[in-house]
Amino acid sequence: MATNPAAAPSTRVSSTRLILTLSGLMAFASLSTDIYLPAMPTMAGELGPGIELSLSTFLIGFSLGQLVWGPLGDRYGRLIPIQVGLGLFVAGSAGCALAGSLEQLLAWRVVQALGACAGPVLGRAIAHDLHSRDRAAEILSILMLIMGIAPLLGPLLGGQLLHVGSWRLSFWTLVAIGIVMILAVRRLPESRPVVPGEQPALARSFAAYWVLLRDPVVLGYGIAGGFYYSGIYTYVGGSPFAYIEYYHVAPQAYGFLFALAIFGQMALGFVNSRVVVRKGSQTMARYGAALIGLASLATLLATMTGFGGLPFLVLSLFAFMSANGLFVANIVAGALDAHHKRAGATSALVGAMQFGSGVIATAVLGWAADGTPRPMGIIIATVGLGAMICTFLVTRSGSKPAGIDEA
Image (cartoon, rainbow, N blue to C red; front, side, top):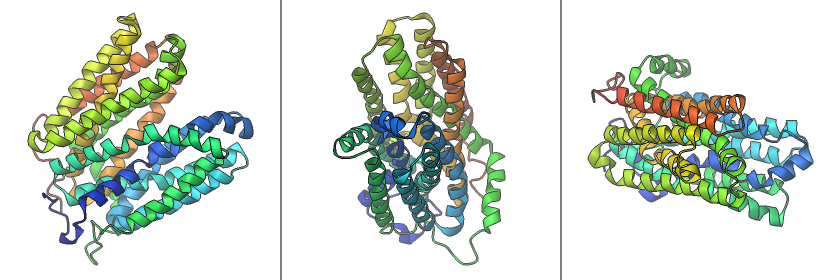
């Protein structure tokens, strides 16, 4: 098994246990939101209008919180910050379950998000600590393949919980899941042991962001991912209106179309996990970027001209979302490979750019709404081509990233 040069010999662990634990950590974003989606109308009836803000406040907290956990993981090791984050997640979930007003719910959603984001940030860093770049991309593909189940199971689980209790039961379930994850993380070995005298000062760990922002490789991968995630959140925010309101698709059928895109993502993620070590993560990232570019142009054609009607729009968006399986794991692996000793901060910066872009994309989509799918198509085409161009620029030379030989 290939390992990262910076990994310690004591970091070997059962691959199955590692993958399952890391998958659970990386699924927190989807699960924390999807599990209560079926209960939102009920929650609005009890807490008042504006319940949709619980989604955007979570996303803001999730994107900004990553910038804190990354440097903490580089300074104090991966496991202690993850467990502290999970503790915050449990406290935030319990606060949501006990909330008596919308304002209380929104405040606790921020706490929940600040804790939840520690898992994905440092989970990616652990995968990098233990494996070489291409093997890390393979592991990340497997993680995304497994965590793709969360958006499918979350609403189903939330719907069933409503049959046996109130909407608060969904958040108590998240409390239980958080506690289970704390116990699971405690069984993992530390992938970045704290060596006295060799760990950077905390201020220096946070100063790493200045170094990363000056590295064209990290910045290129981060911007490419930000562009693509803008398209993903544009799809999430715009597709219900495009399908249900504009093309008169039944809400039940919309759920099927949404699940279809996730299955496409999982299928290409499986393909990536099987061939990335042989082909290389840079090559696979370019394949994914090319698919994103072509699919975004097809989406623009479908939304601007109505070409092919609903079937062509569905096919275009399916291809755009499915490209996730070839793209995201490889660009994350490429960014992490640029700075071995700053993997936590690098993961945090890339993650913040990805999720933060979602806030901007959904705001622009709401501002540009005109009663047609055209704004969705224009935004997806713009950011899709941006993701493709950035990826081809950052992978064009194949040379070592600027930070690869850092002290």
